[in-house]
Length: 467
Ligand code: ASP
Image 1 (cartoon, protein in one colour):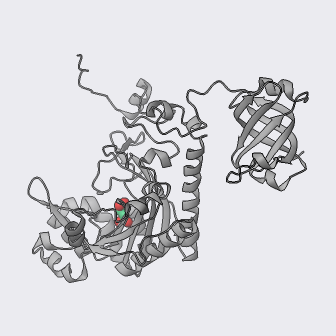
Image 2: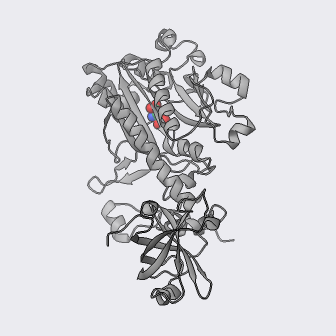
Image 3: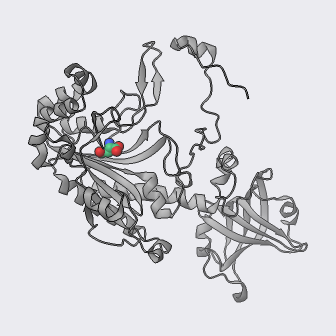
């Protein structure tokens, strides 16, 4: 017999069916044994009646055993119908249970919500945690979200392009993760903090509309809403102004969220200048929902724009607030080129805020090498240092560069809003622990002496402190 997915069993009422999956619950009532079985499409109740041939294997089967079950799909008696539940109106009258694979008792209960279980244990056994209904829902919702984003962008003539993971350090404002090069001893790659420069080079290359579901890797302090690795919907467009990028992204978010059944508080999304946001909310990320809207999962999007381009460093110099590749607002280009009133120069940066989080951000870029050069001069770089940092961009911009701009949306942050979860780990399949330890596997760990030798690396750690 061919396998039927549990989610399709209600189309086979009165017929025999074969399901494959896990034993989720087993209730031995002596004469009869009840089960809940689970596969990727849902759960169904099964019953082994007294004197059934399946009784012997039913006595042996335990929760989390992998089984193949044959039986007849029956309508439940009216009094037992659970109308609000998938398969709440049917049950499988079991004729045969084949035990495919046994299971030890899991280290924690996975039939309920696992969020209160100790994080280290949950992540050590992440593959079991992921079996729980909530985690299955969250991870599937992530896939649905990304698929809908892709669908939207393909309809708008975007091309999906991958960019390198082993690359040069980018000035995105965080610490880099570095990878030693065996072929070039003493030299290092950096993992990308974002594909910023590559996506701009793709605009020089004439792709005009690029996107990537891109991994961004930053060595930052870990927080509830931030890990070392996160995924961005990274977008760049040519021949656009601020308004074009904002309206494309806004249309995308509306289409995606509404097709996932969500309500958006206000359309078009309200817009605040940075100064207005600071005055009204005291922050550039804010939550506009009422308590009731929070309860019902409403999404309150807003744009924040007209950010200062530069801020003072601790040493009294200037650094960029968001992105050195941004264009100042058109009225401030002159000021930037002349390096006047630097603190007042505004950038074309726009951030999208949703339910208190920064859900994404981007800008129009300076495709004119003189502007990019001035940004680096303001930040105190010499000509040579600028050349060393972004010389390849300045060179590329010499060969016919369209005006361009883009944005990146954080997949996890958007998913946290869609699922109403507070922690990044609830929407990532294999997140790290707060101490930066990988789920299930044991990274980071020391290299072998042979590896170190091959790489020409000596580890020189300060002696361990003893208490
Ligand atoms: N590269 C920026 C970031 O990762 C986003 C952008 O400006 O497109 O935050």
